[in-house]
Image (cartoon, rainbow, N blue to C red; front, top):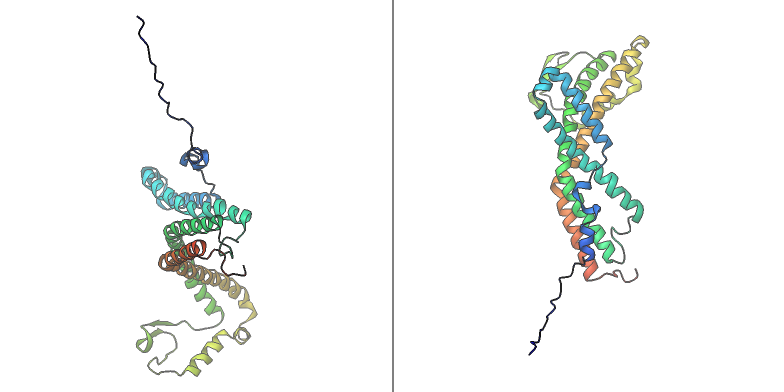
Length: 274
């Protein structure tokens, strides 16, 4: 008798990958291939290297090299995050797709995803990176802008013929130690304050009393003072931007994403004439 042999074929597991798996496996999503180009950050990093070596000396620079490199590289990394995000992501995307996805009349899947991803990425990147920019600008103003304002302002006032004055205190409690005596306890009216401010800003009247011989010193000291005032303005703008990003950007981004979601899900064609 011949025994019957029954063979059962089990289905082999499918090795086909889904489009999502293929996309995740592509070099575009591979972190090892993410090498941002940060020319400005690299230049600032080299500047910090040279400045640090000049301050601490070559021997200390070599001895504390790992600590110095760790700090400077992380500063470069924070700056590079912002630079590469705007240069390699935001700029090309807006150049290719425009800004019609911000708040379009018809909300589609593409415009919803573009706005949501942009808002989330911008929030995460700016909240962490504007602080270090503010710190760098503050140090720059302290070491460059402050001395320029102090020395340039002093030389500029002397070139204008103003007497040297040194005051201490605040408001009515202010006291003049050097210079013409002034009674700060007398309360001035708004008209007097405005008149004195106008006289301080009347450059034509101020220059009338300046000798032509003092013009070179006046212009040179004025330029130095202008550098200091510009540094102060940049610091104030950076501080305001950092305050705005830290306090309000997250709320604005959340509200923007909520509006995009409602527009996409509930009234994608609102207003009706869109």
